[in-house]
Amino acid sequence: MSGRVRATLPLKILLAAAALGAFALAPPARTQEAQTAEARKVDEYGPLRHCDMTARLDNFAVELQNDPGAKAVLVGYDPKGKGRGRAGWNLKVGRYYLANVRGIEASRVAVVNGGSREGDEVTTELWLVPEGAEPPLKLPAEDKYAAKEFSGKFDTYATDALIYRVQIEMGYSGDDISREEFARKLKQQPGSRGYFVVRAPKGSAPGTWRRVGLREEQIIRKDYEVEARRLNSINGGTAEGDYAEVDLWILPKGARPPEGAKEEQAAEPREAVRLSRLDSYGSPDEDSEAWMLKSIARALRDNPRAIACFVTREPMEYEEYVLGDEEAPSGGEAVETPAAEVAEVAEDPENSEASEEESEGESIKDTAERWKKVLTTKYGVYPWRVVVLEGKRMQWSAGRLTAWLVPEKARWPDPQARDADDVDEQ
Image (cartoon, rainbow, N blue to C red; front, side, top):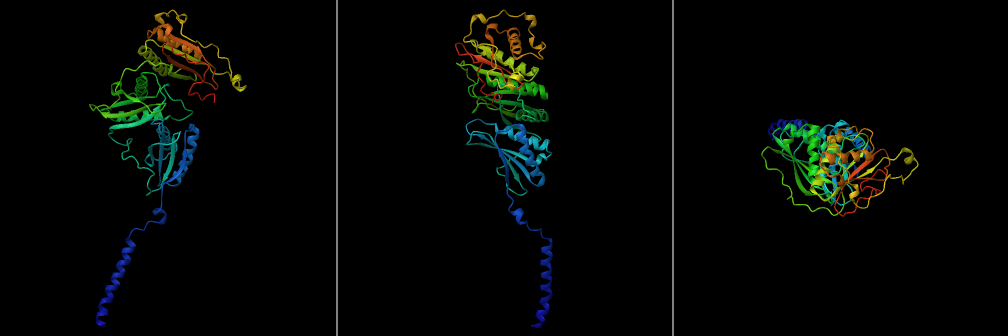
């Protein structure tokens, strides 16, 4: 018996030593904190001015800097039944700001469109996702920005169909960020083609999808030097809300284009509808003017019994604004019905390039008259089909020129009424 014990003692000692060695070599167990790490919603907001949004993003950036292993996940929601793509504006601006202004690594910032949910406003959520934690929503499987070869729908955004370019107080608009990234990817893939599938907003003038598509193609060509032959626009039907919606597609040469809506002959509108809007902060932008004038001329050609009506609103004088004069003189009377008396003798054809005349410092009414001259001489529109009305002055520093398409026998726009999207006097 004693012999057996002596034989087994060294074996027990060896087993114990092996166990201790294994324990020493094993990876450390996860701490309780790591095991319970969860994504945390840092902030949530609706529509904000750019400076207010960046202030919220600044606070979020501090949270990310304090936790270098965490990722940022921005989640956007559109209001149900009010259109798609509007939430993407905040997502794009947020991602761009965090990566390019606050210096957060782009790989640490993800954006997710959560679709639509009940409510009246676009909503953006800022989530901090610690290392090992699950994100609030499933992240996109493919990073379209980093992909060497991308094919499919690249982006979607909602955009104002009335203006050429969104003006914001600072930074970049969501539209411009989308276009820049779209153009960059097209340049990286010279064998690909770019498509704009445009859904016109409800109640817009006939042919709005064409005008929006023309604008998108023009901006990509001129601002980012992408060849016109690589760009095409497609009618996507009608948008859910009051904004135009644009799907950006990138497909290989020869691939079948994205599916569009069946184009049918649109009935002439029965009421006056807005075609475009120019807010003037100085000398008019040549690209903006060229797009608007071409769009107006095409709308008149597509609706041969309609007229174009320009409503001009001069900026309010500083004294008028300081004194709070809400009833500043309009400088003109409303015209009730079109009449033959408004017909004028066409200007000398030699002056057809009126848009090249000096425009710096001109009033809004002068701009409207100059546009009328271009339409009647360069585009061959009869003078009686273009009428200029003077409206109520605007507060702040901008004047506004709004172009309307007025069908035969329809009521003219009221030049004294506030624009539907006018926020300058609120």
